[in-house]
Length: 243
Image (spheres, rainbow, N blue to C red):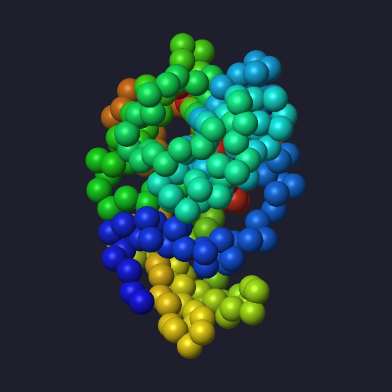
């Protein structure tokens, strides 16, 4: 089963196998990041947050738990269907394309855990940033939490096997035409599967150009989830705050 890489995310993210492979993500780290980030931005109690590309809602759920009115949106119908079971009067989930403006304004828009850089056409990246800008109220902040591409490339593990829930996932990583690519192959019930993740290797300079083109003002840049100073060679993350 080989999938069209142009819209790889719309197929791979909608499979149960994506969630199996990444089931061991560190929720403790994610929750601590949300505490640190919301405190730094001084989002008011009861403030509104849009979790853009929310997946199954792990960040949105915690943000709601600590007092925020949260809307989680994602292109994956399966992920949103799963997340909706946790909905309440201050937590809502909806299928939505992040290239298009969501029809509401927020105190903050969070795009977390490298949920950017998926598109083949840079016009779609520009549309996404422009949409975030329109989704912010007068005092709102946008946040993109991206990988530090330079660090990732320097520390790339070319091949790896991960066994999760009895499934052997064979992972092959490489850089090609400005993308960091991960080929994922595995077999379930004698049926072979082959998926690919493709993320643009955007650097801080690339983002600065995208922000300039969309008339967005970059305010702060951090290199990890504790909001330490960004270093292009040693930081694991690229966390950008803008409006």
